[in-house]
Length: 236
Image (spheres, one colour):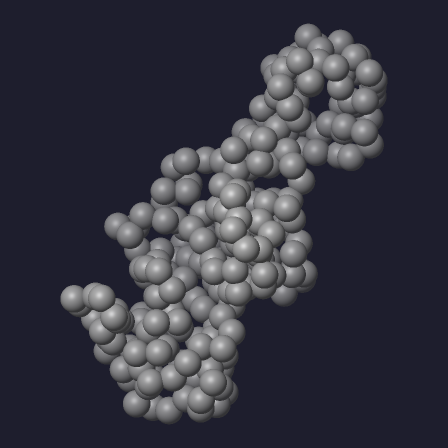
């Protein structure tokens, strides 16, 4: 693939803009400046590394990203009341069409997946796929056995005709609930906690499938997902 096309697919602007970056000697490949846009390079995920203005990037056919979402950000390109989560990412990702894999409320924190791979997005958002998600909620009132049993057995949400049941519900302490669900209904976890007789004061997504949010990833930080982490996500 020629260098112009590499930059274009990786979100560095229009083809004309990419050609200008190269012509201005702002791009290097494996440490060597390249000023010829038509120069070909072998591409494979993670093996080709190039730099633009001194910032190194790996070539990736598709972007699979993890963001530790902080509170106060909306999972939208057109946010209404708070900054967009995309403001926490380099602009190249928005340019190449990366989107949130499902959404977290603006006040919900934790594990947020993003990708430009439509099949991957569908895999983790389609209700038919039944991907478990683990949330940790801080509750206003102390948890009790009756609330936990109701969440496991199923609670009827306002406007719903069938009960919603958690895969599991465990108290980590008197006011900390670990709740696993398969669905992704609107405000589902908060509504389930309310229907069980309590109130959610804070909510954090800790795990999707078999992948747990790394403790080393700071709020607001992002990272690429490698093959092992993608396998863990699909492992459930």
